[in-house]
Image (cartoon, rainbow, N blue to C red; front, top):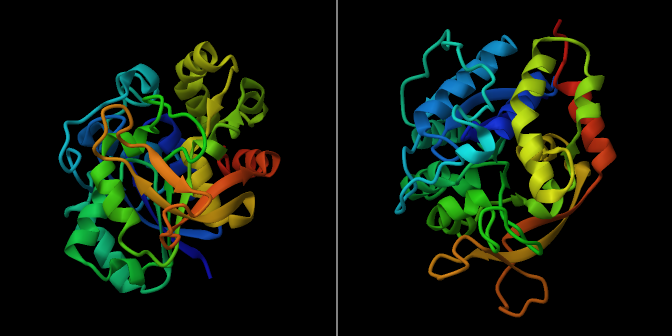
Length: 311
């Protein structure tokens, strides 16, 4: 049985690498990809998603979702992902197909109802679409097999403010709705583990020559330079691909089941993920928080899967 995945993306560089992973893993069936505003505008995220799928000759529905966060203005991340969100890669490509009709939250509900208990949602952007879907279909949490989201920083510093990780910061209200919705299985793949999942130039050079290799190299060039300036390591953090990989291969990360909440009303800490390690709030655990990652196993899986059967 192939694992049924639905990806929800705001396609910047690492979302694109996550799409490559999901599209090329032979044990998964990609039911569709929904897009959301985040790193880039909804329109740009959709264009980028269609282009990445075309790059690997993969077809699946791509459905547009929320154009803004629930309550807040958009907050694009051009400084990291470049003007087009892919570090300039695929800049002049016109998508050969159009997005599928419909609205992402409705598409999410449809897929969950069509395959009850079988679908895994992998969320690699702000959680706006899923929050809207939960509001519209309160039994959605019981219909899914599991939800894995890239976001949050349980016991480490943020990457957009000192306290917050980007996806949570952009739409903390949506994140709170998702965390409190009662999902059967909800996993946070946050900066605690993704900062260890680093793709280096040596890794990229080891890929066989292909359109995929060229894309990975081009899209990550600026990102790697920027990451090196800030963190002193020449690498691209594979935030989103790790979430995709974990959804397919849960052995890659160790998690702890903790009560987790999101700060939404703070002067300095909006978007911060609060993970209650010592049960001080005495609330029921709701999130499997990833705290350890098998870096070598993940990188090896990533490098062997993305160029799959392509020349």
